[in-house]
Image 1: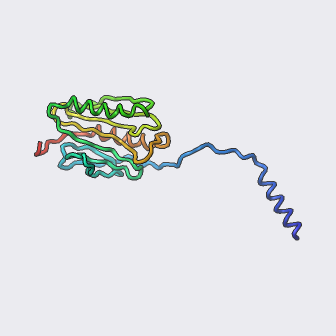
Image 2: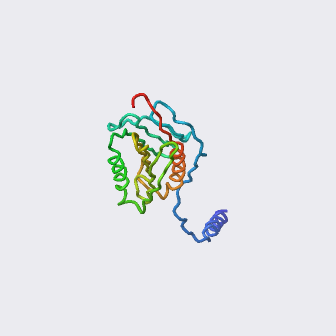
Image 3: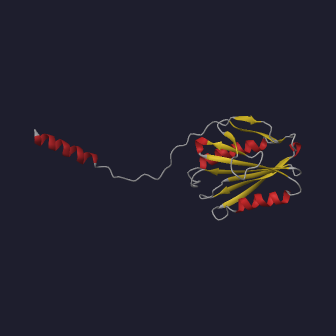
Length: 194
């Protein structure tokens, strides 16, 4: 009985080892992306736009935060779109230079930085959108919008983890679609304090 059991075990081991083992290529976890659906951000702020239903808007609580600064948090992706607002008082060139300088800080880690102009004349919204490509780029997408007279908004997308934009590519593309929708639905508002 022992010999029979031992021989069956040996046959089982030998037959299961006949396949050649080939290591599988490195892969990443599957990311389920939500459908693009939007709701309005319309409050006492000097601007309004539509943002994704799965995102959450919170006030910027950093010590440098100013009035009307917000963070749009994508909790399921561990990402934040930092949104800052400035009133222009003859200092638009400085804000534009700051926006360019903050994008240029990514040059050492970026493979390419492309910029696209945004113009919505009927609503007086003008700006630039920066697509920052590169595996180690900390912020893959940034933009600024202005009415060229009195208002300026800057946005920068950051992931709250070490950058690996190859594995985050589907998420980045999905969030870029959301940001493009935010920009195209962006409108200036008059508020009492201005």
